[in-house]
Image (tube, rainbow, N blue to C red; front, side, top):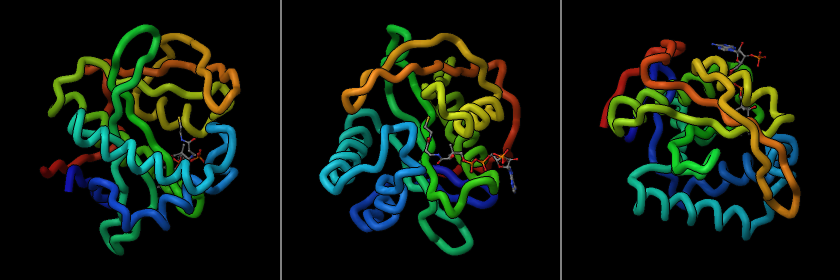
Length: 182
Ligand SMILES: CC(C)(COP(=O)(O)OP(=O)(O)OC[C@H]1O[C@@H](n2cnc3c(N)ncnc32)[C@H](O)[C@@H]1OP(=O)(O)O)[C@@H](O)C(=O)NCCC(=O)NCCS
């Protein structure tokens, strides 16, 4: 296990998570900000990319499980990204629609933010968010983030205006209690 919070456990994704990953990545509403549902090769490529990230960086998006049932309900974690001309650490979060609005995204993402500051020595943690993705912006705000800039991302043949949210180490607010384990 990488991290645990009162309700959640975060661990590396495996091939056993493919059905739960499909429930996230192949749902058109969940993937609205990514220009729609992924097909099967894109799901496989997503999982392979996460394994590359674990190997190369030591972190990536992790599986989020409910501690009570061990059900995999989402993904949350840290990835290296190029934002506003810098290589930075980003916190990312994607949850199955059935588990939205219960505070799980904020709880998992706050633990990842703290992991970046306390275990990886980051001075600043970013979230790059498409300008239409209000749910994601609300999570970023609850993490203590503010808008640092705007930029265009080119993804799936579309020009997507994005906002760069970030929180600095000395600014973080304690939005969720985190109980870290390695
Ligand atoms: C972005 C995303 C993860 C946010 O998920 P979420 O479920 O809204 O996030 P949370 O529940 O943690 O937090 C916010 C909501 O939970 C509510 N909440 C917080 N704690 C709660 C609790 N213990 N019980 C019930 N509700 C709670 C908050 O009031 C808020 O509600 P609101 O959104 O209705 O105002 C989700 O919309 C998603 O997976 N989107 C698709 C993928 C995506 O776009 N990811 C981001 C890419 S940048």
